[in-house]
Amino acid sequence: MSPADLEEALVAVLTTMLTDGRHDPLALFELHLESTRNPRLRDTLTDALRRRADLIVRQGRAAGIELGLDDAMLLEMSVLGILFTALTTGVPPSPDESIRTAVRTLLAAITG
Image 1 (cartoon, rainbow, N blue to C red):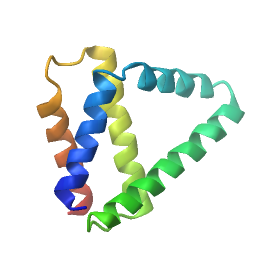
Image 2 (cartoon, rainbow, N blue to C red):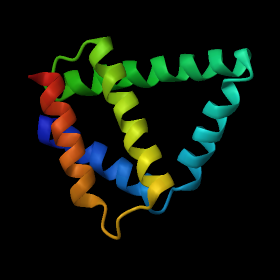
Image 3 (cartoon, helix red, strand yellow):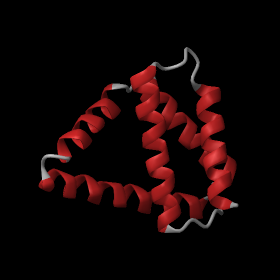
C-alpha cells in the first residue's frame, strides 16, 4: 500500500459514509451524545476510538507513513468532525473533491 492508496481508501470510506452509508455515522454520533450521560458507554466508545487509531497506525505503516498514536487519534477525530459537519449541515451533491481535499490536507499535516 502506498500513501496514495491510503488516501484513496480514506476518501472511499468517507464518501460511502456520507452517501450510501449515512445511517452508520449518524448512529455513532447519537451514541457519542448519549455517552456524555453514560460513563460506561463513554468507556466503550473511547476503547473503540483507540482501536481505530491503532488500525490507522498499522495502515499508515503499510503505506510507508510513520504515524504515532497521537497522529492517528488526530486523524480519526478529524475524520469524525468531517462526517459530523457534512451530515448535519448538508452533504454537497458530489462530496468526493471536498473529502479528498480534507483527507489530503490532514495527511500532509500529520506526515509533515
